[in-house]
Length: 200
Image (cartoon, rainbow, N blue to C red; front, side, top):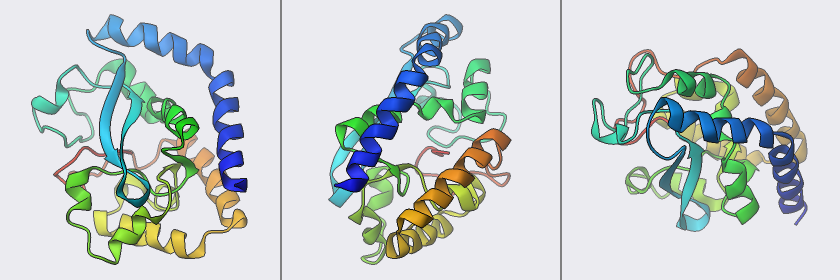
């Protein structure tokens, strides 16, 4: 209950503070690239329940059917100029806070993934679904997209086994530094898991 209250207070507060920025993005994105400013993708959350994650669109409409498909690499030509700025500061994930308000996500937890990835989990790796997926997490502050897929899963499992308020505070502090530095947005040797879009 305390974690849920924390999620509600933080997500509502950040949405209010960032509402002018969100409004600007919602207007500017379609001006640069035709289509909806919102990107939705079905993900797997707590206990395997599926939901639609909400993000600001940073690529041209229909990008998943162009070029490398769902895999996203650095200097990807499908990323718009505004989209590159939003990605660098992780502002494209601000609408994730709506998912938090709905109870589909948390502020801190493993990043939500797609069903195709979940289908390849081992029984041990399925423990990753025992908590709500988060906007930021232990894997995000320990390498982000620079990690291999298995490394991310192991870090997420470690977090779940050692989750405390103290650890969560550490993750929040390091998340701010990671966002402002814009580090490890993309892998230099290609996406960690080619079956789905990089979510960092």
